[in-house]
Image 1 (cartoon, rainbow, N blue to C red):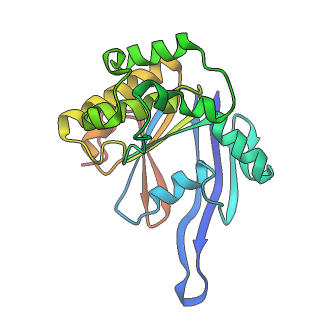
Image 2 (image 1 turned 90 degrees about the horizontal axis):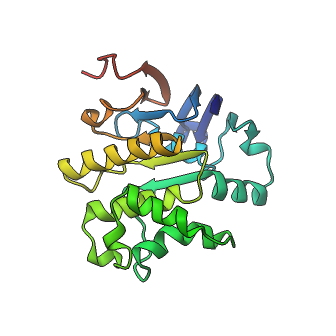
Image 3 (image 1 turned 180 degrees about the vertical axis):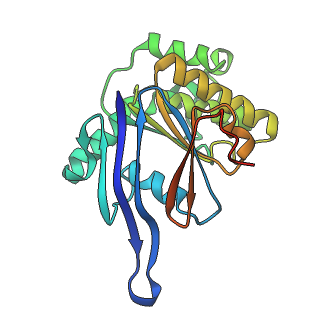
Amino acid sequence: MDILKVQHLSKTYGDGENQVNALKDVSFTLAQGEFAAVVGESGSGKSTLLNCIGALDTPTAGNICMDGKDLFSMKEEQRTIFRRRNIGFVFQSFQLVAELTVEQNILFPILLDYRKPEQSAVNEILEVLGLQERRHHLPSQLSGGQQQRVAIGRALITKPKLILADEPTGNLDSKNSQDVIDLLIKASRHYQQTILMITHNNHLTTSVDRVLRVSDGVLTDLGGKENEKLS
């Protein structure tokens, strides 16, 4: 079953001589539980693609459907609520709330949506991410790798249809980077989450289901991990 369907997506900034075509007629789908990586040079359009899919930016043309719903046919308030409940974000800079504990940071999206959290779900995520012993710690008391685990837990807690990870290992060393990828894969399998991850590190794409390359706004599907097309 396809969770994400992107059709003829284009994004243009500016006009005239200053016009930049950040995305050019991009089309692809992601199935439930699929873990795909997006690779490409800096400025190729990777982040623009993720921002449009996450409804943080508006495309110039094309459609993005998630679980059969067209994101940009919704009114802005509807789209905000849909995004909050159906899309999880993992950022390079963690973006944790410094005054909140690990558990509180993970719960934050639930509370933001005025919903009552299920303690069993929180406990399960803490266990999956190996954070049980850190649940009452503040972000300042954690390593970079542990902070990124908390950010992953925050993305998982709403049980979103899609997780968007923008360079989630950009601030981590090689060991912690692989640990974070392994945790994302574990979460993808455990919760049947669909994950779309931007990375500049080709070594981290060997474990994902599929690799997409963006170059000058054009997307190419490089296929599954058995295809050695990144070398």
